[in-house]
Each structure stands twice: as C-alpha cells, then as structure tokens.
Length: 209
Image 1 (spheres, rainbow, N blue to C red):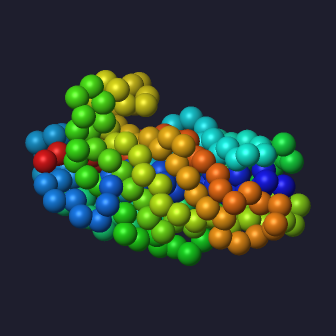
Image 2 (image 1 turned 60 degrees about the vertical axis):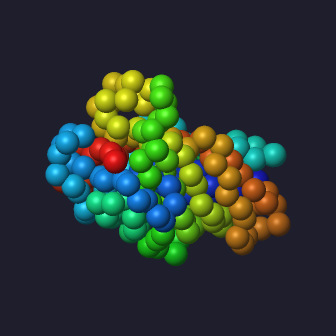
Image 3 (image 1 turned 90 degrees about the vertical axis):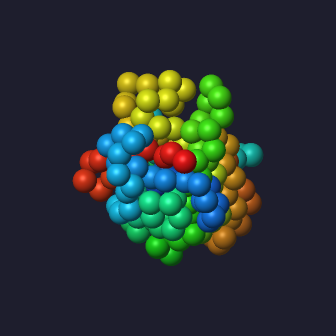
C-alpha cells in the first residue's frame, strides 16, 4: 500500500512543479522577465508541465506519473508563487493505476530566487504548503510539505531538457511527509521531477537580478 502513498507524493512532486519559480518568500534582487533576459518584468500566470516521468520512492516501493500540469501566479520580484490548480495522470504503481488529486488549494507562500551557480542553476525554486492525495482500491494517503529545487533559464546549457528552450525546474529527492491516511502509507517519500515553465499566455520566462 505504500505504493499508494508514493503516487500521492508523485502528485505532490509535480505540484512542486509549478514551483517553477524559485525559493523562499523573500526574493530580494530577483526579477522575473518575459521574452528574454532583458525583457519586461513579468507578474502573472505561470504554467508548469512535467518533462519526463515524475518519480516517487519510499522504503517500500516506487511509483510514477507520466503527466502533470500546474497553474499558478507569481510576482515580478519572485514572491507570492501561488499554485491555484494541479492535475495528474498516468500514475501507476505495482498495484495498478492510482488516482492522484491536489488538495487544500491554493498552495501559497512559494517564491523564486535568482541565485546563479557557475556551470549550474540560475536560481532556486520553492513550492510551499502543497498537499496531494492518492487513492487506489479505496485506500487513500495524503502527503504535504515544501519542495525546493533548482531553476534554469531557457538558454542554460545545464537545464534538464536542452531540447526545450523554456525555463525549467528540477526537484531531486525532495521529501514530503504523510499527513493522513492508511497505516500502510510510509511516513515519508522522496520525489524527483523536472518541469518546463511558461507564462499563462505561453511567454518564455527568465529569472534575473
């Protein structure tokens, strides 16, 4: 049954997806731009779509989701990353298909921080207060927490998928904890996922100082 919880976490992971904007709630020195690194400051909608499968691992089993889409909003200074909707599909485990659903939306308090590392990321991404549940064969698990990962601009050669010229985010072994559900659900799970991030109108997004 722990696999069930994994799926739940998988969903959570993708949510972290929308985290496409980056780290803690104070993002001083960060500007989100539209179109290019020198384009106008951007405040508004953000859409995060997974790149590859979302993987969730626990001490007892593994699970994957093949599709995840999250919608949210962000301020031009990188603050107030709020996830307003999230959907997940193609989720499976050794038990078969699993239904993953976002709960307690909106997830508020996330942000983007421009913090480049030579030869690596352009910033950090944090999605806070996300909560996701998974149900299989009538058994349910709910997980919650904060996922933090790396953010990449559209031209960063180290971004997760170099064939996609969009901003991207990657969470590696992010930890979520059990909030409620069956005693068979493991207490924690780790999530690995990558996403592309665009404005709600398809705009290319950049994080700069």
